[in-house]
Image (tube, rainbow, N blue to C red; front, side, top):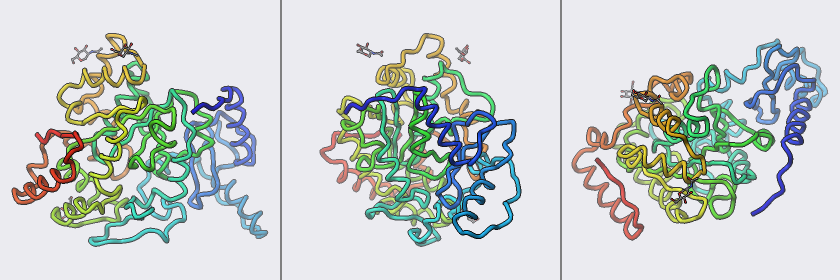
Length: 390
Ligand SMILES: *[C@@H]1O[C@H](CO)[C@@H](O)[C@H](O)[C@H]1NC(C)=O
Ligand SMILES: *[C@@H]1O[C@H](CO)[C@@H](O)[C@H](O)[C@H]1NC(C)=O
Ligand SMILES: *[C@@H]1O[C@H](CO)[C@@H](O)[C@H](O)[C@H]1NC(C)=O
């Protein structure tokens, strides 16, 4: 697939015009890479860096509404641009489902989800966002990493970012998460099509969708380099249970382990069946622009997997940069790193929990483990894909 690529200057002009049109004002500073979508999901407000703009996003959005309503309300109180609040604030359906509350279901133990074509998804993956993700026009120097949740994707994201930045973490207020583009989600740093179109390379996209809903069309169709990371499903199930329990983004789900395990086995957790997800990407593993990784391989032999990643993406690392990436990718480093750990996000304090292979043994009973093994054998038979469970 070839598409002519607009020049960087044209892109930058477009981005500025867009920001101006949406802000109804001339930006006083440079436009930040990030942005925010209002609760109505319609106004796209660019956050403007200091000096502070005289019109905030909220006020501009309110002003626009007044006009369309023909009903002049007093302007909303001036506030600092709250893109950061949007990013770090707690998940809320009212904000992050972007007005699409009708599609949200509540299951047993309060588990919240929505379905699209029967696939169980988080409330913040709206049909609109998903469609936008699928229609992103990717470039050959883009990287999109994908996984089922809790399979090492944040680890991989950190590795990719470091690899592209000589092993050096960004300082200040732009943590790892804000350098990634998660198009299917209204949370945690929503991007619009126009924003990502205007972004210079290298762009790193994130996705938790099965292959049928791949960002930009998927390997073999889009030029982007795709990296899928998979982890043994027993550790995934346990890690996911901890991640979804008592949290705002899952409706405060408070089911016991055996209930969660049943949901997981039935493919009724957010993102659906682990088996369907992993096998859908495994089927395209041989595409030229596709790399399939396993969490356990990264755990066991990180340097050789890093070499695979850097070879696949065409980003050679010098000896010292290679060592810096290795150092900054260790679990111990990431856990205490302000850059890599999602510690500025409410509810994410324990995001990097254990990061071990085989922790499932502390949770599964022998009977649960045996039943799971049986299902695993059935579902994986003939695929040629195997996982290490310890
Ligand atoms: C969720 O909260 C309940 C009530 O506080 C607690 O008993 C339970 O252990 C929590 N679940 C998890 C997996 O942390
Ligand atoms: C990747 O590895 C292949 C085969 O070993 C080699 O020919 C190629 O130059 C490498 N590419 C990069 C970018 O390292
Ligand atoms: C990587 O970590 C090791 C052990 O802490 C240290 O000796 C080495 O200097 C570090 N390398 C780089 C490039 O920072």
